[in-house]
Image (tube, rainbow, N blue to C red; front, side, top):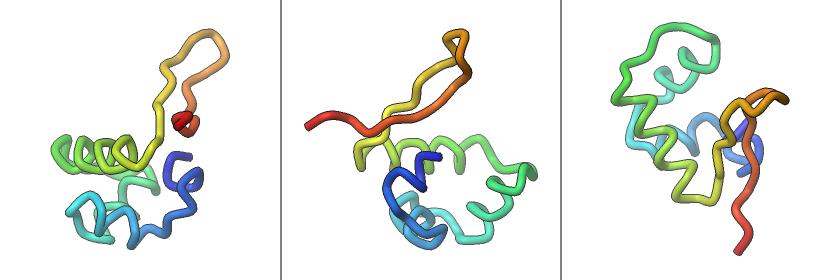
Length: 67
């Protein structure tokens, strides 16, 4: 959802996170990914303005940070 909010392709996320495109694809397909790769992807999206919202009764989600 974070990648979609930024209108990024899988390659955009991979480039900004410093991981391989296959890593992004595997993670999004629900396959195993290294914790360090997941941390890099999250950090890249947060740096671009994504805010991750924890489960609060309505389910986890994302939104874009207000400037």
